[in-house]
Amino acid sequence: MKHITSKCQLSLGQSLITFIILNCQPLNVLQNNAFRDMLYNFELSFKIPSEERCKTMIQESYNWTKDHLKELLKLGADTINVTTDLWTSCRNDSYIGVTISWLDQEMKLYEALYS
Image (cartoon, rainbow, N blue to C red; front, side):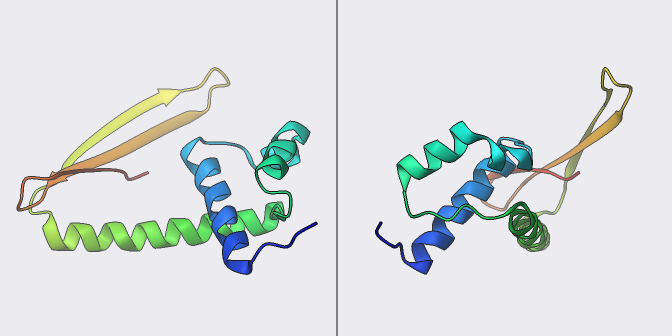
């Protein structure tokens, strides 16, 4: 079995975390045999991160995104539009979604999920 570089391992791990975050996947997807087989078919030497490592990577991603969003808002948002959405699940769990949008000086639209 060939070995992959640490840079490649890191890149694949970040891609996995991006997939989990953007598709709202539960972390137990890491235990799904078909999912693991798919990952190994893409790169046999990829070491799938543990659930704990994935939690850490998700937290790091959140922190980076939060800081990046703060900078974007400082630099280019004179006025921010806030939208909320409230709902209750079938199990009677309550949720709120808060989105923000703004235009920068070049009239480029930015949108972000705030909560």
